[in-house]
Length: 135
Image (cartoon, rainbow, N blue to C red):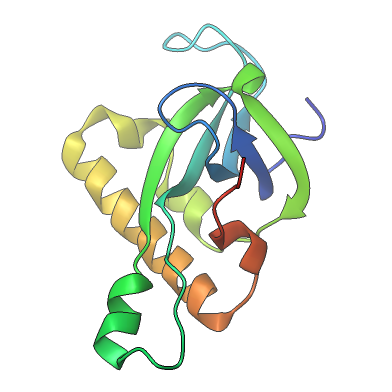
């Protein structure tokens, strides 16, 4: 699909991560041996950062600003694209379909995703991406 490109923010509509926001890292429009459908490799936020105020101590602010990421292969039918895009530099080379073969590789990829999302959150860019959906 021409609108599901690299960097597009989408919302997952089915499954465990339904309602979570993700960034498309690698779209695959044709079938593969492991996945017999059009799919995308995505990185998203499993646990969003909580609201912080000035009154809170620095330690409490740091604790409430934590992000828990996830990476997953998702069917295009279960993604709802948004008008937003998010450029996460360097993730395309780090995360690929080979990443999911071993648990240790997946954990390393999650750490890299966490670092890039933390940097993006702390700079204050793309604020909408880091707030949970309310429905």
